Length: 421
Image (tube, rainbow, N blue to C red; front, side):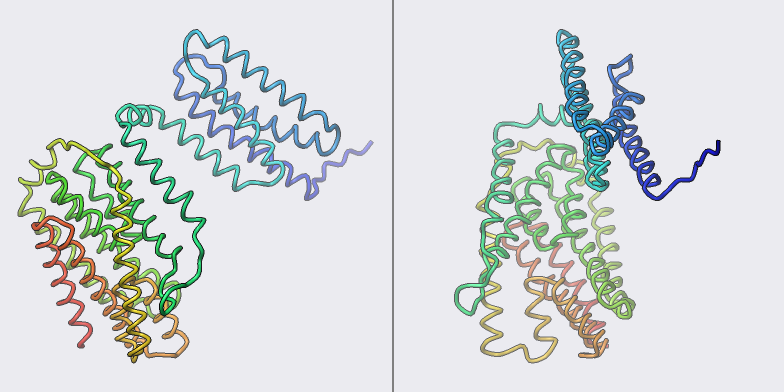
């Protein structure tokens, strides 16, 4: 009798599903085994077996017997309930039991080829399990005002934003409510992130807001950290560093966007933007070494946090943003954008990303010369720098505003050199 061990494509796919399911279970089980130093209900071996069981159950359901999912699912639930009540007296909680159920369902998901979704859920689940102590400590520290702040943020981002129409209305079709509310969401996000960083790590790490926020909007970062510098003197230097870092990150964001649309322009754009960035790095080093004693002293001070989230502040910023958009529309209607440089100057007041993408694309298609596109992008960055400095002057501490205006002068001097050469 001849035995054929040839494997077809369907078998390869099925083996991959089981291996994928095994890996997902190992990931979650590894964390559970590490977390529990003693013998545990489910660990490094049980979790992968459960996820594989989910995939096997789905296979049997599709190919042989549709009642298998009911039998196995009820068995898993019964096993979870028995263990939960056995451990109830020890007040261990139901985290492991819920993780088991998730692993089983992920195994079913994997059989139906939802690989990416399964991987994301598994990673997020493991991440949440691993952060047990951190999250518990954080939950114990937050106040009722903090919870209300998070709920307000959820209303702004999850409830209101999807309901707004994505169309232009009003005089000159200048206003897009969805676009304007995006600014509220960005500012609100930075506001909440800044507060959480202060709560979690104290004043020393507030500059992280600049790093993260610079990837989204350096203007919003400048506004948010300027407010904090006025409200909490202890964050003066950390807020200043955060603003400068946001400006620095923005420069590299411009280079990245230009390279995505038009790789041939990346070197020409990089030269002025990197030169400006070097100026920023030298400047932040100068501030640090000049005030290092003050920085150490102020960073060790405790902050009495109050009112962690103010939606009115975000709406105020969005209102100013809307007014600027309206003025730009009016100028375009009556005077026109006669030339790339005027358009860059106006566009930079609001955003650098849009003009960077537009000019890079035009240079690629031959609509304008590369040198003109580069100078237009630099001009937009200078215009944006002035706008951000203006916000810091209005809403920030005078000390921070003084050093941000010096930062603006550095931007003008270096950027101006490339504009006129």
